[in-house]
Every structure is written in C-alpha cells, then in structure tokens.
Image (cartoon, rainbow, N blue to C red; front, side, top):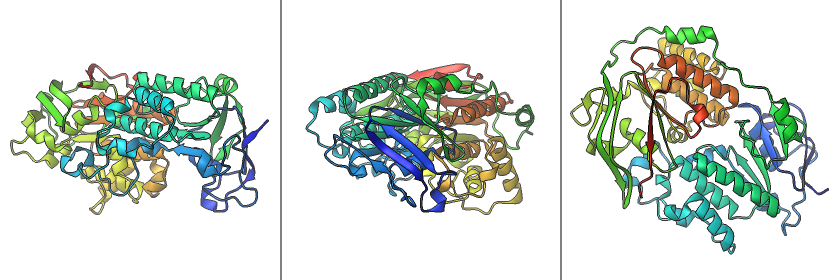
Length: 483
C-alpha cells in the first residue's frame, strides 16, 4: 500500500515544538483522516510536523505523492488554518477596519485573489457551492467570517492539492453550506487522488467520508484507528462542566455601581446599511428588552455581524441610523465609551484584531477599558477580577503566557473572559464557541446560563449551530440576505 505520509520516531529539533513522545504516523493511499483532541492538545504541532514546518532530529518525514508530478511537500500539501476564518493574516488589518468605508478602496477584490485555473468544471462547481459569483466584486475586507472561509476553501481547492489539511473547516459556515461542503469533500476524496486531513476540536463533527481518526492529547500522537471504532469509544460530554460552586459564585456576584437599568436595551428603527451597490440591512426594526436573551441567526453574509457592529458602535454608519441603547439615542451627545462600559463583546473580527504579543491577563484586563491592547497599569483590584474570571473559564494558569503562544481555543477563552470581566449589562457574543472542544463548549454554555440568570442581564448570541445555544435563549431573530 502506498504510504503517502510516514513519520518514524519523529522528534523536532527545536524543543519548543516537540510533542511529548516521538511521533509515529503513517497515512496510506485512500485514507481520509481526522486529527482530534481537546484545546491545546498539540493538534497544530502535529500538523506542523506532518507538513515539515519544523525539521526533525533524525528521520525526516517521508512523502510519496504519486501520481503527482512533483514530490515536494509545498506543491502537494495545502493547509487552511483556523485563523483563515478571520481573513488574511497580514499586518495591515486592524479591528473595525471592515466597517470603515474610507479604508476599503485600497483593499483587493475577491476576484483578484482567486487563482486562474484550466479546470473550469471544478471552478464552476466551487463557485456555485459557495456563492462565489456574488462575492467576486466585493472587497476582501467586507466579507463576513463565513464568506472568508468559503473564499479560502475555494482558493485552496483550485490549487489541486494532493493532500488538503483543514483546521475546523465547518466553523463559521451556515448549516446548508456545511452539508454541501461535506458532500463535496466526500465526492472529491472518492473520485480524485485528493486525501483529506481534518483537524477538529468539535469531535461530534466527524464527516462520514473520514476513514480513520488520530487522537491527540497532552502533546501525544495516538495510534490511527478506524472512524467507527473511535466513535464507539468516544466519551460523552458531561451535562455540566462548570462546578456548582463556580456557578453559585457567578449568580451571587455583587451588583456593580453605576449600571444602566433601562427597560429598553436595544431599539433599532428602520435601520438600513449599504456598501456600494450592496444592501446588507434594509429597514430593520428590532427591540431588545431588559433581561431578554436573543439568538441571532441567518445564512453567511446576511448581516449578523454588521448588525452587532452597529449596536457596539464599531461601525461608523451607526451614527446615521436611528439607534437607541439603554434608552439613550445614538448621536444625542452620549459618549460611546460610556456606552461600551456596559457591553461585553466577542466576535471573529475581534479575535483577529487581538493578535497581540501580550500576556493573556493583559488581554483580559483590556476589557475593563475597551481597548485593543492594554495601555494602563493594572491595579491590584484589576488583577484580582481578571484572575477570578480566568479561573471561571479554566485558564488562570495561562495568565502570564503570551496570547500569541496560546492555541486558538485558548485564545477564544481569553477573549470570552475579557467580555465578562466588567460584568456587563449587555452581552454580545458573535460565534463565541469557535474552535472550542466539546468540554469547553459545555463550560462556556454553563457560564453564559449562570450569568444570564442574574438581574439586569441581557444577551444577544450568534451561532450557526443550534446545539450551541444556551438554555436561557427566549427570543430569536433570523436575518435574510438582501438580493
């Protein structure tokens, strides 16, 4: 049997990038692989070893990409990382850039970033699957996180890789697109030489075309086992992960001083948003009352994140709209920074904007002042409250580590702690469980549920997975894409 990728007693030369034990792994022709494990288990380290990013001490990775004309790993292996859901990882992006029209003109269009290909059949199929034709003349910066992922998948598949590695490919995609993508990958793996490796934190999301699973935990690469065997032995997720003591501690947090207690939290009156010729929101009326917990849903590109950017005043067009927050009309003289003190927020755009080389606790503390970095000295009481919330999210041990050295799942937990740290009256959670493993998903849901049971707490949450919604949801808003 052709051994497409083989590693024997693989140990990286640099100690910082080593697994706990030598890597022994063999992926044979026709095998479709899922690499699974909890957050910070070492899944990305294993992929970096497979792709040859980090040289090995003795035995280098062995490749056989037949029938590909090239045997170079860089020609045959394409890797879409988790962070691709936030767009290109250049240094020119800044948080809120997506909403600032005057900074859009100098950014490239989607059509300029897609490769030319002679395989028009595959191109047309991908364009139809992901709705690329509708996106071709859009600026890259205007794409939603789901649209960005569709773009990255199209761009990569058009390069005809022999091995395609995808980190959490289904996150950020609406349910219909997830199904279509599974079907496409299944057909490509069946009728072409493409071999697929999925890196999954959400282990109940293993598609049927996957033949084998490689479990990773504590930086140890487990043995490759058949998919059915893995599913049969998979441990169920507990009904609750947050301890009763921590849940009680959240429920009994003291009321903070100076909080807003308005009966109306969000009022939008016939709000419309346009970018160029494209209408994102059209005459939207929406009222959120104190204590309500809303699920905001809709297909990719329907305007969910745009709507939330208006509420948080990250979008300059918010000042041209009839918006009232906590009973205070936008543009009537209120300070947006005063309003932001009462809103806790996390989103894919924020995650990308927070790629800062700062200790994790500094990222959490920035939520106290609504800044991207930390520009103030932390007071002892700030350290205490940040440490308290990091403990609630199970990440207190990470507080002195650089944010950039954390796994994407750990980064998301840090940003969630940042959203809660000021005990906000309004929680806005835009796809908050992105990249989290099963246990951490349940943990965050537990925290949200405990938090929202308190007086004067209102929440709006976006997710494409129905099962991610906490039990406290009592209202729904579904957005449709404008033609």
